[in-house]
Length: 339
Ligand SMILES: [Zn+2]
Ligand SMILES: [Zn+2]
Image (cartoon, rainbow, N blue to C red; front, side, top):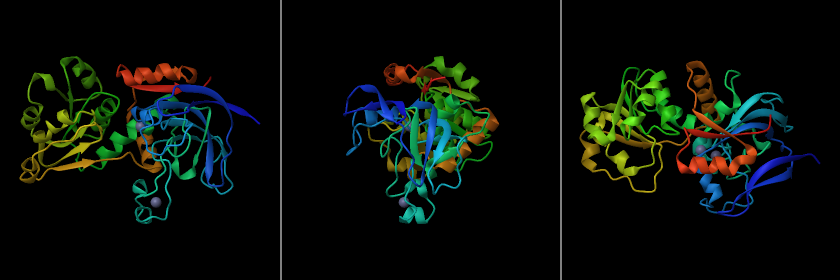
């Protein structure tokens, strides 16, 4: 039986083990992908450290997958071997629960999550449900597409559904793994784009990514500065710092939205009055379906939005993961498979 290289974690808190496994065969409704690149996302700590209740081990992490279809199950009609594709966090849905019957697959009550409910992309091959697959445009190299499958879709899909219109002020809090993409998308979607970061050293980068304005939170009250710009129709909060996020709510315009995708451990404290009279909304947003991923990839190819990445070969997974955890990566770490 043909073998592949894969990286597994055998127990909560265990090390990454580089192992040989049989190349898995796709079931009837699944496809097999020859992985070319896989992003290392901060959420991979769920697998590495056992923070997902009931997660079976050993498990192969990785939900930012880019590669090429290599085999398809007998019931799969829409995918063919050779197609370039990606797979993200949303790893499949049941089609029969109430949210699925309403077509809202990302809210499926038994949603499958890539690398949580089945093995992920830190491997040479991965088998996934056919409905989890997004087509990847030829203009995007696999290592550039991979981070768009989680970090990219999360900011792109949340922003495009947040209600801002061309020309509106949209602020992106945090210039990191999510934020450096959020600034680019906000600019390319036609918003007056305000980047919010800590310290002056990120201003030049934020402007290079497309920000019209930069607010240094160390230099004063960022909410007041946003109000001087007329208030933000949307504040996209990407850095996982609940205190810093809560400090921005008064910078949201009347009727505007605080859109939270950065998941920190602390409660988000807001006074009801900060929401009530200005009729502000606080909303969270999960990533999206494969179709949303496909839109993300196409928009990125069209508009030139690209992640900034650091590449590591699969064998150096421990080093790459450490670089991600350290917060020093600029900005996404991507594993590349062979070649
Ligand atoms: Zn992720
Ligand atoms: Zn469902």
